[in-house]
Image (cartoon, one colour):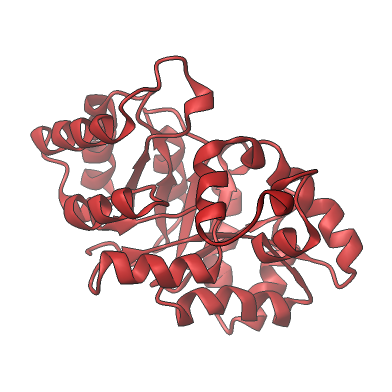
Length: 278
């Protein structure tokens, strides 16, 4: 693994990222910014974030295999790597079947996409794969620098580490709400989890595999499920939840601050202090 992500990063939807925000996130001490929400394949946003900063890494979480040809992703990777060597990580993934009518043979499609990245000379240690289930986690370990699981828990991280083995990057995302009122925090987190994720079978299958029940997934998610997927409380409590991923075997964990429409900097500042990033 040649890209240094640090132990903690920030995940934010492509629509909520700017170079100015990247500068602030870097100043707070985070090691990486993950561009979420299937960014366009030209990856000009990633380039602009790197241009504005000095050391922080930028990763995609994720470039969608259905919407961005591997050759386009590879060209963007090489352009960015030439300008910012060692600071960009290409995260790719298959997305979910509800997003496209062409969704078929997903595992074979992932393998073919990675083959095409190989042909375009995107190095194994310069890319990661979105992965939840055992089969794709194993593929991530074999064909990329590692896995970027989304909407998971430390329990999943522990199982994922056992599957991918040592020396393979494991970088889960975790949603956070800095609010000490549980009901208010759940009211913020539940809509984000429920729509779309509790309606997408790759995520629901993973949660059921982890031991959650159909009842937990119904009606927007049980309180227990929402609390597991969305860390809430004061900054110290949220920091402790993120650190559980590291204790379970993750190398890096990226926090998605909710609500996403708000300015994340105040919450990220509090969290950075609790994580002792500065």
